[in-house]
Length: 361
Image 1: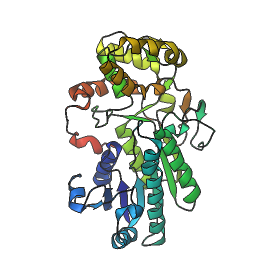
Image 2: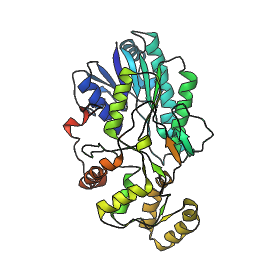
Image 3: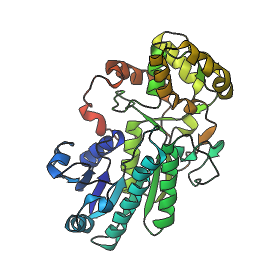
Image 4: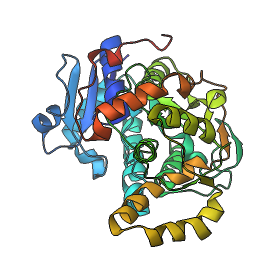
């Protein structure tokens, strides 16, 4: 068994995963980090005797590695975990494709070279998203991909295109596709470094700054804590098998109405009125804009990219991997941490033990 290669180690999920790979395993880990040189790359991650950090860039040809460095990696690496991605909902489609599609293609090329050299390739694990389902209605299984769905934003479309690319060109590789849903903070501590998707609307809720919400109270909201995701990626990338796995709440998913109840109880304030999305767009939204000053209109515009996730009609299958626990069991911890961290404005150090609790705990 050769070494392990990880991208995205400086990201929210990636840093949690890196901690597990180093704490639980005995394999050397090579992390590709975007930086000008190796010392600058290494400065972005904690030191560890089994961690080698390489300056690289998935947006550049050959990942920005020269031939000698590529050969050194491919001769030693037998497992590749590609976690790096742009998760921005507001980035344009071409920019999203440059990172999420072209970057994935370059990682597939590297995996192919690993398969030809050294110990061969044991596994290529790609961290995708359950929202390759886009605006699909109804059940969406692990074997589903192109079902004629539309997409809410360039992020969803680019991740869908990346999966399509992998199935077309990496069919001969031991490919594993891992699809988390909405990733929030650690279920035990609430800790997060990524205050997006669920957090901006909840922050606005806490401030009483959402006059109205376009949503369906019965719509499922599939939320997974980062410790569950990192534990799952660690386990599946080590033990297999190949194939596609949903890392989702699935049968344990909550609903928009239930989340509003929980948030209202936590913040001790009434929930905003809820309108069907079409009525909101045609009538409520224009009326609100007329009554808002420029700053509030801009704040609403930034938050609206997340609103479509409160009127979804898709439910994710969880047949191949145990679902995440219900968010009701750790929701208050998420909000307690968010308030302590001032919703991302106050840096809070990651708890030292966050990466060492087994999946079964």
